[in-house]
Image 1 (cartoon, rainbow, N blue to C red):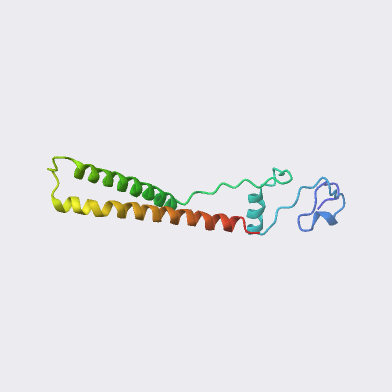
Image 2 (cartoon, rainbow, N blue to C red):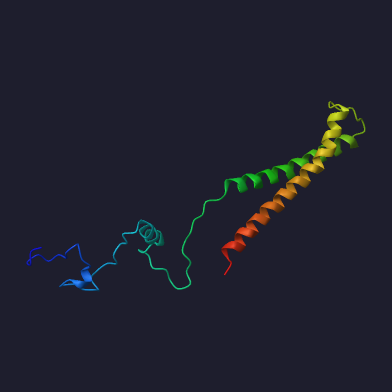
Length: 138
């Protein structure tokens, strides 16, 4: 290394070389890839105000979304089926296009669909409660 050059010798830590100024130097990047990834994920460019949480955007679980939709569909479908069966049996002229077995299956499956939909909804709420507790545990 020539003495007239104003650069640091890369083989040694710059803090121990002539011309080092602590305030002018940026924090050194880690040679450890895991630590470098953590430093990049922390977002060192933006300083957070006191009490401000780091912004995290989590992807929603697609299975929980599907279970929520299934729960709503089961409840709505069961209620509609039950109302249709009730309206069918309340008619004065009870002649219908469906046979007895189809009506009987619908009559018993409609409340069962509502019950399964409610149970699925309770399971989804339980999952979110456990996830919330995990995030806010101190």
